[in-house]
Image (cartoon, rainbow, N blue to C red; front, side, top):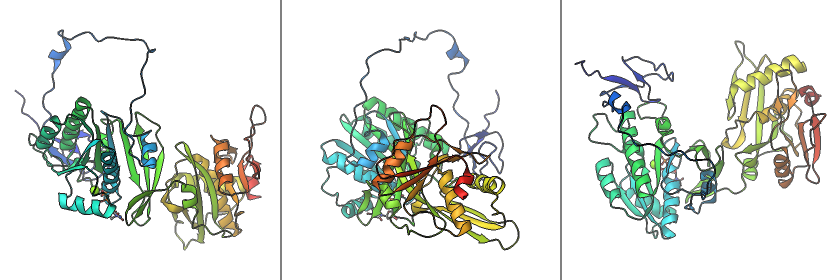
Length: 454
Ligand code: TYD
Ligand code: MG
Protein backbone atom coordinates (compact mmCIF):
# COMPACT_ATOMS: atom_id res chain seq x y z
CA UNK A 1 0.00 0.00 0.00
CA UNK A 2 1.23 3.46 -0.86
CA UNK A 3 2.46 5.49 2.07
CA UNK A 4 -0.01 8.18 3.21
CA UNK A 5 1.59 11.44 2.17
CA UNK A 6 1.05 14.68 3.99
CA UNK A 7 0.14 17.63 1.81
CA UNK A 8 0.64 21.35 1.96
CA UNK A 9 -2.44 23.53 1.84
CA UNK A 10 -2.37 27.26 1.13
CA UNK A 11 -4.10 28.94 4.07
CA UNK A 12 -5.22 31.82 1.91
CA UNK A 13 -6.85 30.10 -1.05
CA UNK A 14 -6.97 26.42 -0.15
CA UNK A 15 -4.84 25.16 -3.05
CA UNK A 16 -3.09 21.86 -2.33
CA UNK A 17 0.61 21.37 -3.06
CA UNK A 18 2.57 18.13 -2.80
CA UNK A 19 5.71 19.87 -1.48
CA UNK A 20 6.37 22.89 0.68
CA UNK A 21 7.19 26.04 -1.22
CA UNK A 22 7.53 29.67 -0.26
CA UNK A 23 4.85 30.99 -2.53
CA UNK A 24 1.48 29.58 -3.49
CA UNK A 25 1.27 29.10 -7.28
CA UNK A 26 -2.48 29.45 -7.23
CA UNK A 27 -2.95 32.78 -5.50
CA UNK A 28 0.57 34.19 -5.39
CA UNK A 29 0.63 34.73 -1.60
CA UNK A 30 3.89 34.18 0.26
CA UNK A 31 4.37 31.94 3.29
CA UNK A 32 0.84 30.67 3.36
CA UNK A 33 1.48 26.94 2.97
CA UNK A 34 0.90 24.74 5.99
CA UNK A 35 1.33 21.02 6.34
CA UNK A 36 -1.88 19.09 6.79
CA UNK A 37 -2.79 15.47 7.22
CA UNK A 38 -3.98 13.74 4.04
CA UNK A 39 -7.60 14.12 3.06
CA UNK A 40 -9.75 11.19 4.09
CA UNK A 41 -10.38 8.72 1.32
CA UNK A 42 -13.60 9.55 -0.51
CA UNK A 43 -16.16 6.95 -1.56
CA UNK A 44 -13.85 6.06 -4.45
CA UNK A 45 -14.70 4.22 -7.66
CA UNK A 46 -17.20 1.96 -5.91
CA UNK A 47 -19.64 4.86 -5.79
CA UNK A 48 -19.80 4.89 -9.58
CA UNK A 49 -21.51 1.56 -9.94
CA UNK A 50 -25.18 0.83 -9.14
CA UNK A 51 -27.09 1.10 -5.90
CA UNK A 52 -28.22 4.72 -6.33
CA UNK A 53 -31.76 6.00 -6.50
CA UNK A 54 -33.03 7.80 -9.56
CA UNK A 55 -33.27 11.56 -9.23
CA UNK A 56 -36.50 13.19 -10.35
CA UNK A 57 -36.24 15.77 -13.13
CA UNK A 58 -38.95 18.41 -13.32
CA UNK A 59 -39.91 21.31 -15.58
CA UNK A 60 -39.02 24.93 -14.98
CA UNK A 61 -42.59 26.03 -14.40
CA UNK A 62 -44.00 25.63 -10.94
CA UNK A 63 -45.18 27.41 -7.88
CA UNK A 64 -42.51 28.42 -5.46
CA UNK A 65 -43.11 31.08 -2.87
CA UNK A 66 -40.32 33.59 -2.16
CA UNK A 67 -38.33 32.54 0.91
CA UNK A 68 -39.71 33.84 4.20
CA UNK A 69 -37.45 36.45 5.76
CA UNK A 70 -36.39 37.33 9.25
CA UNK A 71 -36.07 41.10 9.28
CA UNK A 72 -33.16 42.27 11.41
CA UNK A 73 -34.81 45.62 12.02
CA UNK A 74 -31.69 47.36 10.71
CA UNK A 75 -32.82 48.62 7.32
CA UNK A 76 -29.32 48.97 5.84
CA UNK A 77 -28.48 45.38 6.79
CA UNK A 78 -31.82 44.05 5.57
CA UNK A 79 -31.33 45.64 2.17
CA UNK A 80 -27.87 44.14 1.73
CA UNK A 81 -29.30 40.75 2.68
CA UNK A 82 -32.04 41.17 0.08
CA UNK A 83 -34.84 41.74 2.60
CA UNK A 84 -33.68 40.02 5.76
CA UNK A 85 -32.18 36.70 6.82
CA UNK A 86 -33.51 33.56 5.15
CA UNK A 87 -34.27 30.57 7.42
CA UNK A 88 -32.09 27.48 6.83
CA UNK A 89 -29.42 29.51 5.07
CA UNK A 90 -25.85 30.49 5.88
CA UNK A 91 -24.37 33.96 5.63
CA UNK A 92 -20.68 34.77 5.93
CA UNK A 93 -19.76 38.20 7.26
CA UNK A 94 -16.12 38.98 6.53
CA UNK A 95 -13.90 41.94 7.27
CA UNK A 96 -10.73 43.16 8.93
CA UNK A 97 -10.42 42.68 12.68
CA UNK A 98 -11.89 45.62 14.58
CA UNK A 99 -14.07 46.83 11.74
CA UNK A 100 -17.32 46.20 13.64
CA UNK A 101 -18.52 42.70 12.73
CA UNK A 102 -19.27 41.64 16.30
CA UNK A 103 -20.94 44.96 16.99
CA UNK A 104 -23.39 44.87 14.09
CA UNK A 105 -24.21 41.21 14.63
CA UNK A 106 -24.86 41.70 18.32
CA UNK A 107 -27.12 44.62 17.48
CA UNK A 108 -29.03 42.62 14.85
CA UNK A 109 -29.22 39.47 16.98
CA UNK A 110 -30.50 41.38 20.00
CA UNK A 111 -33.21 43.04 17.93
CA UNK A 112 -34.44 39.78 16.47
CA UNK A 113 -34.49 38.27 19.95
CA UNK A 114 -36.39 41.29 21.26
CA UNK A 115 -38.98 40.69 18.55
CA UNK A 116 -39.71 37.34 20.16
CA UNK A 117 -37.55 34.91 18.15
CA UNK A 118 -35.06 32.50 19.68
CA UNK A 119 -31.56 33.75 18.91
CA UNK A 120 -28.26 32.16 19.95
CA UNK A 121 -25.02 34.11 19.90
CA UNK A 122 -21.93 31.95 20.28
CA UNK A 123 -18.74 33.85 20.86
CA UNK A 124 -15.48 32.06 20.30
CA UNK A 125 -13.37 35.20 20.54
CA UNK A 126 -14.63 36.97 23.60
CA UNK A 127 -15.67 35.76 27.03
CA UNK A 128 -19.28 36.14 28.12
CA UNK A 129 -18.26 39.06 30.32
CA UNK A 130 -16.80 40.96 27.39
CA UNK A 131 -19.87 40.45 25.25
CA UNK A 132 -22.05 41.60 28.16
CA UNK A 133 -19.96 44.75 28.49
CA UNK A 134 -20.42 45.44 24.81
CA UNK A 135 -24.17 44.81 25.11
CA UNK A 136 -24.34 47.26 28.02
CA UNK A 137 -22.55 49.86 25.95
CA UNK A 138 -24.99 49.30 23.10
CA UNK A 139 -27.99 49.43 25.44
CA UNK A 140 -29.05 45.89 24.60
CA UNK A 141 -28.98 44.19 27.99
CA UNK A 142 -32.79 43.81 28.12
CA UNK A 143 -32.87 41.67 24.98
CA UNK A 144 -33.65 37.97 25.64
CA UNK A 145 -30.68 36.88 23.51
CA UNK A 146 -29.08 33.56 24.48
CA UNK A 147 -25.33 34.00 24.80
CA UNK A 148 -22.55 31.43 25.12
CA UNK A 149 -18.79 31.36 24.82
CA UNK A 150 -17.65 28.16 23.14
CA UNK A 151 -15.15 26.95 20.56
CA UNK A 152 -15.41 23.16 20.53
CA UNK A 153 -17.52 22.17 17.55
CA UNK A 154 -18.61 18.96 19.26
CA UNK A 155 -20.19 20.95 22.13
CA UNK A 156 -21.71 23.54 19.84
CA UNK A 157 -23.21 20.92 17.55
CA UNK A 158 -24.63 18.99 20.51
CA UNK A 159 -26.28 22.16 21.81
CA UNK A 160 -27.72 23.06 18.43
CA UNK A 161 -29.11 19.55 17.84
CA UNK A 162 -31.47 20.13 20.76
CA UNK A 163 -32.66 23.51 19.51
CA UNK A 164 -36.15 23.06 18.17
CA UNK A 165 -37.10 26.63 17.39
CA UNK A 166 -33.96 28.70 17.01
CA UNK A 167 -34.44 31.35 14.31
CA UNK A 168 -30.86 32.61 14.20
CA UNK A 169 -27.47 31.34 15.31
CA UNK A 170 -24.42 33.62 15.14
CA UNK A 171 -20.95 32.05 15.31
CA UNK A 172 -18.31 34.68 16.02
CA UNK A 173 -15.90 33.72 14.55
CA UNK A 174 -15.58 30.59 12.43
CA UNK A 175 -11.79 30.77 12.81
CA UNK A 176 -11.98 30.04 16.51
CA UNK A 177 -14.01 26.84 16.19
CA UNK A 178 -12.24 23.51 16.13
CA UNK A 179 -13.07 19.89 15.59
CA UNK A 180 -11.08 17.46 17.73
CA UNK A 181 -11.05 14.84 14.98
CA UNK A 182 -8.68 16.98 12.92
CA UNK A 183 -5.02 17.44 13.69
CA UNK A 184 -4.72 20.95 12.33
CA UNK A 185 -4.95 24.04 14.50
CA UNK A 186 -8.11 26.18 14.70
CA UNK A 187 -8.22 28.69 11.87
CA UNK A 188 -6.52 26.48 9.31
CA UNK A 189 -8.29 25.76 6.06
CA UNK A 190 -9.05 22.19 7.09
CA UNK A 191 -10.63 23.22 10.41
CA UNK A 192 -12.55 26.17 9.03
CA UNK A 193 -13.95 24.07 6.20
CA UNK A 194 -14.93 21.13 8.34
CA UNK A 195 -16.49 23.25 11.09
CA UNK A 196 -18.38 25.46 8.65
CA UNK A 197 -19.69 22.42 6.78
CA UNK A 198 -21.02 20.93 10.01
CA UNK A 199 -22.65 24.18 11.16
CA UNK A 200 -24.21 24.73 7.73
CA UNK A 201 -25.56 21.17 7.76
CA UNK A 202 -27.18 21.90 11.14
CA UNK A 203 -28.65 25.15 9.83
CA UNK A 204 -30.24 23.36 6.89
CA UNK A 205 -31.57 20.48 8.97
CA UNK A 206 -32.80 22.51 11.96
CA UNK A 207 -34.04 25.40 9.83
CA UNK A 208 -32.25 28.30 11.52
CA UNK A 209 -30.43 31.12 9.77
CA UNK A 210 -26.69 30.83 10.42
CA UNK A 211 -24.32 33.77 10.42
CA UNK A 212 -20.61 33.01 10.38
CA UNK A 213 -18.11 35.73 11.13
CA UNK A 214 -14.77 35.45 9.32
CA UNK A 215 -11.66 37.57 9.59
CA UNK A 216 -9.74 38.58 6.53
CA UNK A 217 -6.04 38.55 7.21
CA UNK A 218 -3.17 39.30 4.93
CA UNK A 219 -0.65 37.23 6.86
CA UNK A 220 -2.32 33.98 5.94
CA UNK A 221 -2.00 32.60 9.46
CA UNK A 222 -5.77 32.32 9.57
CA UNK A 223 -7.75 30.85 6.73
CA UNK A 224 -9.22 33.58 4.61
CA UNK A 225 -12.99 33.48 4.36
CA UNK A 226 -12.51 32.96 0.66
CA UNK A 227 -12.44 29.21 1.19
CA UNK A 228 -15.96 29.49 2.65
CA UNK A 229 -17.52 31.61 -0.04
CA UNK A 230 -18.74 28.71 -2.12
CA UNK A 231 -20.23 26.93 0.90
CA UNK A 232 -22.48 29.73 2.10
CA UNK A 233 -25.57 31.29 0.53
CA UNK A 234 -24.46 34.87 0.94
CA UNK A 235 -21.18 36.62 1.61
CA UNK A 236 -21.10 40.13 3.02
CA UNK A 237 -17.96 42.16 3.48
CA UNK A 238 -17.58 44.91 5.99
CA UNK A 239 -15.30 47.60 4.59
CA UNK A 240 -13.93 50.96 5.59
CA UNK A 241 -10.82 51.87 7.45
CA UNK A 242 -10.72 52.19 11.18
CA UNK A 243 -9.61 55.81 10.92
CA UNK A 244 -12.96 56.70 9.35
CA UNK A 245 -16.21 56.40 11.18
CA UNK A 246 -18.02 55.14 8.06
CA UNK A 247 -18.48 51.43 7.50
CA UNK A 248 -19.75 49.91 4.31
CA UNK A 249 -21.38 46.51 4.22
CA UNK A 250 -21.28 45.03 0.76
CA UNK A 251 -22.85 41.84 -0.61
CA UNK A 252 -20.39 40.05 -2.89
CA UNK A 253 -22.50 36.92 -3.22
CA UNK A 254 -26.17 36.49 -2.47
CA UNK A 255 -28.37 33.60 -3.52
CA UNK A 256 -31.44 35.45 -2.25
CA UNK A 257 -30.81 39.00 -3.40
CA UNK A 258 -28.77 41.40 -5.47
CA UNK A 259 -25.00 41.58 -5.15
CA UNK A 260 -23.05 44.82 -4.97
CA UNK A 261 -25.75 46.24 -2.74
CA UNK A 262 -24.23 48.36 0.00
CA UNK A 263 -25.33 49.38 3.44
CA UNK A 264 -23.73 52.42 5.01
CA UNK A 265 -23.15 52.74 8.73
CA UNK A 266 -21.47 55.14 11.04
CA UNK A 267 -19.51 53.86 14.06
CA UNK A 268 -20.50 55.87 17.11
CA UNK A 269 -19.94 55.59 20.83
CA UNK A 270 -23.10 53.53 21.05
CA UNK A 271 -22.52 51.14 18.19
CA UNK A 272 -23.22 51.23 14.48
CA UNK A 273 -25.88 53.63 13.31
CA UNK A 274 -27.52 53.39 9.91
CA UNK A 275 -26.87 56.14 7.42
CA UNK A 276 -30.05 56.58 5.41
CA UNK A 277 -28.69 59.23 3.05
CA UNK A 278 -25.10 58.28 2.21
CA UNK A 279 -24.68 60.94 -0.49
CA UNK A 280 -25.19 63.73 2.03
CA UNK A 281 -22.68 62.05 4.31
CA UNK A 282 -20.02 61.52 1.65
CA UNK A 283 -20.31 65.10 0.50
CA UNK A 284 -20.55 66.60 3.98
CA UNK A 285 -16.96 67.75 4.15
CA UNK A 286 -16.67 68.92 0.57
CA UNK A 287 -15.53 72.48 0.05
CA UNK A 288 -16.61 74.16 -3.15
CA UNK A 289 -14.22 76.11 -5.35
CA UNK A 290 -11.17 74.01 -4.75
CA UNK A 291 -9.33 72.74 -7.79
CA UNK A 292 -8.94 68.98 -8.17
CA UNK A 293 -12.36 68.05 -6.87
CA UNK A 294 -15.35 66.66 -8.80
CA UNK A 295 -18.56 64.96 -7.72
CA UNK A 296 -19.29 61.54 -9.18
CA UNK A 297 -22.90 60.37 -9.49
CA UNK A 298 -22.46 56.65 -8.93
CA UNK A 299 -24.65 53.61 -8.45
CA UNK A 300 -23.93 51.16 -5.66
CA UNK A 301 -26.14 48.12 -6.05
CA UNK A 302 -29.62 49.51 -6.54
CA UNK A 303 -28.93 52.84 -4.94
CA UNK A 304 -27.45 56.04 -6.39
CA UNK A 305 -24.63 57.50 -4.30
CA UNK A 306 -22.82 60.78 -4.85
CA UNK A 307 -19.16 60.93 -3.85
CA UNK A 308 -16.37 63.42 -4.16
CA UNK A 309 -13.32 62.51 -6.25
CA UNK A 310 -10.17 64.40 -5.28
CA UNK A 311 -7.02 64.69 -7.38
CA UNK A 312 -3.73 66.35 -6.59
CA UNK A 313 -0.80 66.86 -8.96
CA UNK A 314 2.62 67.89 -7.82
CA UNK A 315 5.85 68.13 -9.81
CA UNK A 316 7.77 64.90 -9.56
CA UNK A 317 11.16 65.05 -7.91
CA UNK A 318 12.91 62.98 -10.53
CA UNK A 319 12.71 59.26 -11.13
CA UNK A 320 9.42 57.75 -12.15
CA UNK A 321 6.42 59.80 -10.99
CA UNK A 322 4.24 58.45 -8.18
CA UNK A 323 0.68 57.28 -8.71
CA UNK A 324 -1.15 56.98 -5.41
CA UNK A 325 -4.79 55.88 -5.45
CA UNK A 326 -7.23 55.39 -2.59
CA UNK A 327 -10.67 53.93 -3.32
CA UNK A 328 -10.24 53.43 -7.05
CA UNK A 329 -8.34 51.23 -9.50
CA UNK A 330 -4.78 52.41 -10.16
CA UNK A 331 -4.70 50.71 -13.57
CA UNK A 332 -7.73 52.72 -14.57
CA UNK A 333 -6.00 55.92 -13.42
CA UNK A 334 -2.95 55.19 -15.60
CA UNK A 335 -5.26 54.62 -18.56
CA UNK A 336 -7.06 57.92 -18.02
CA UNK A 337 -3.77 59.80 -17.71
CA UNK A 338 -2.59 58.24 -20.96
CA UNK A 339 -5.84 59.19 -22.71
CA UNK A 340 -5.62 62.77 -21.41
CA UNK A 341 -2.04 62.98 -22.67
CA UNK A 342 -2.37 61.47 -26.10
CA UNK A 343 -5.96 62.36 -27.04
CA UNK A 344 -6.44 65.70 -25.32
CA UNK A 345 -2.92 67.11 -25.53
CA UNK A 346 -2.42 67.59 -21.81
CA UNK A 347 1.00 66.98 -20.35
CA UNK A 348 0.78 65.35 -16.95
CA UNK A 349 3.64 62.88 -17.26
CA UNK A 350 6.11 64.74 -15.07
CA UNK A 351 3.72 65.02 -12.14
CA UNK A 352 3.11 62.85 -9.14
CA UNK A 353 -0.61 62.03 -9.15
CA UNK A 354 -2.66 61.41 -6.03
CA UNK A 355 -6.27 60.34 -6.31
CA UNK A 356 -8.70 59.87 -3.45
CA UNK A 357 -12.35 58.93 -3.14
CA UNK A 358 -13.50 60.94 -0.14
CA UNK A 359 -15.29 59.21 2.72
CA UNK A 360 -13.61 55.81 2.45
CA UNK A 361 -15.84 54.37 -0.29
CA UNK A 362 -14.34 52.00 -2.87
CA UNK A 363 -15.62 52.56 -6.38
CA UNK A 364 -15.58 49.84 -9.01
CA UNK A 365 -17.73 51.41 -11.69
CA UNK A 366 -16.11 52.49 -14.99
CA UNK A 367 -18.75 55.26 -14.94
CA UNK A 368 -16.46 57.13 -12.56
CA UNK A 369 -13.96 57.78 -15.39
CA UNK A 370 -15.45 61.12 -16.33
CA UNK A 371 -15.50 62.42 -12.75
CA UNK A 372 -11.90 61.32 -12.25
CA UNK A 373 -10.92 62.98 -15.52
CA UNK A 374 -12.70 66.17 -14.43
CA UNK A 375 -10.83 66.15 -11.12
CA UNK A 376 -7.51 65.57 -12.92
CA UNK A 377 -8.13 68.31 -15.48
CA UNK A 378 -9.21 70.67 -12.72
CA UNK A 379 -6.07 69.91 -10.72
CA UNK A 380 -3.83 70.30 -13.78
CA UNK A 381 -5.32 73.63 -14.82
CA UNK A 382 -5.82 74.84 -11.24
CA UNK A 383 -9.40 75.76 -12.07
CA UNK A 384 -12.17 74.45 -9.80
CA UNK A 385 -15.03 72.50 -11.38
CA UNK A 386 -18.54 73.93 -10.95
CA UNK A 387 -19.45 73.35 -7.34
CA UNK A 388 -22.99 72.30 -8.24
CA UNK A 389 -22.15 69.90 -11.07
CA UNK A 390 -21.99 66.11 -11.04
CA UNK A 391 -20.17 63.89 -13.55
CA UNK A 392 -20.58 60.36 -14.83
CA UNK A 393 -19.56 58.45 -17.96
CA UNK A 394 -17.08 55.84 -19.08
CA UNK A 395 -14.02 56.90 -21.08
CA UNK A 396 -12.68 54.74 -23.90
CA UNK A 397 -9.10 54.51 -25.18
CA UNK A 398 -9.67 56.96 -28.02
CA UNK A 399 -11.07 59.48 -25.57
CA UNK A 400 -14.72 58.85 -26.44
CA UNK A 401 -17.22 59.18 -23.60
CA UNK A 402 -19.47 56.15 -23.39
CA UNK A 403 -22.97 55.60 -22.09
CA UNK A 404 -23.45 54.07 -18.67
CA UNK A 405 -26.45 52.42 -17.08
CA UNK A 406 -29.10 54.12 -14.95
CA UNK A 407 -28.46 57.70 -16.03
CA UNK A 408 -31.87 58.80 -14.77
CA UNK A 409 -31.38 57.45 -11.26
CA UNK A 410 -28.05 59.28 -11.07
CA UNK A 411 -29.61 62.54 -12.23
CA UNK A 412 -32.50 62.23 -9.77
CA UNK A 413 -30.10 61.78 -6.88
CA UNK A 414 -28.10 64.82 -7.99
CA UNK A 415 -31.26 66.93 -8.15
CA UNK A 416 -32.36 65.64 -4.76
CA UNK A 417 -29.09 66.76 -3.21
CA UNK A 418 -29.48 70.21 -4.71
CA UNK A 419 -27.06 69.99 -7.64
CA UNK A 420 -27.89 72.15 -10.63
CA UNK A 421 -25.95 70.60 -13.50
CA UNK A 422 -24.61 67.31 -14.80
CA UNK A 423 -21.97 66.37 -17.35
CA UNK A 424 -22.79 63.03 -18.94
CA UNK A 425 -22.26 61.02 -22.13
CA UNK A 426 -23.95 62.26 -25.27
CA UNK A 427 -26.90 60.10 -26.18
CA UNK A 428 -26.45 58.04 -29.31
CA UNK A 429 -27.49 59.73 -32.54
CA UNK A 430 -30.19 57.21 -33.33
CA UNK A 431 -32.33 55.19 -30.95
CA UNK A 432 -30.76 56.82 -27.92
CA UNK A 433 -33.38 58.20 -25.60
CA UNK A 434 -32.45 61.33 -23.72
CA UNK A 435 -32.48 60.72 -19.98
CA UNK A 436 -35.39 62.60 -18.47
CA UNK A 437 -33.67 65.34 -16.54
CA UNK A 438 -35.31 66.31 -13.29
CA UNK A 439 -36.49 69.89 -13.19
CA UNK A 440 -33.78 72.47 -12.61
CA UNK A 441 -30.92 70.22 -13.66
CA UNK A 442 -28.93 71.44 -16.65
CA UNK A 443 -27.40 68.68 -18.77
CA UNK A 444 -24.10 68.99 -20.62
CA UNK A 445 -23.78 65.99 -22.91
CA UNK A 446 -20.29 65.35 -24.22
CA UNK A 447 -19.02 62.83 -26.74
CA UNK A 448 -15.27 63.15 -26.23
CA UNK A 449 -12.98 63.84 -23.31
CA UNK A 450 -11.56 66.81 -25.23
CA UNK A 451 -14.96 68.54 -24.77
CA UNK A 452 -14.39 68.35 -21.02
CA UNK A 453 -10.89 69.77 -21.28
CA UNK A 454 -12.19 72.62 -23.45
P1 TYD B 1 -15.85 44.90 16.75
O1 TYD B 1 -17.30 44.75 16.49
O2 TYD B 1 -15.31 44.23 17.95
O3 TYD B 1 -15.01 44.45 15.50
P2 TYD B 1 -14.77 43.00 14.87
O4 TYD B 1 -15.74 42.06 15.50
O5 TYD B 1 -15.01 43.21 13.40
O6 TYD B 1 -13.36 42.63 15.14
O7 TYD B 1 -15.55 46.47 16.74
C1 TYD B 1 -14.54 46.93 17.48
C2 TYD B 1 -14.30 48.40 17.30
O8 TYD B 1 -15.47 49.17 17.31
C3 TYD B 1 -13.47 48.82 18.45
O9 TYD B 1 -12.31 49.43 17.94
C4 TYD B 1 -14.32 49.75 19.23
C5 TYD B 1 -15.35 50.21 18.27
N1 TYD B 1 -16.66 50.43 18.89
C6 TYD B 1 -17.19 51.70 18.92
O10 TYD B 1 -16.59 52.67 18.44
N2 TYD B 1 -18.43 51.91 19.48
C7 TYD B 1 -19.15 50.88 20.03
O11 TYD B 1 -20.27 51.10 20.52
C8 TYD B 1 -18.58 49.56 20.00
C9 TYD B 1 -19.30 48.41 20.58
C10 TYD B 1 -17.34 49.38 19.42
MG1 MG C 1 -15.26 40.51 16.77
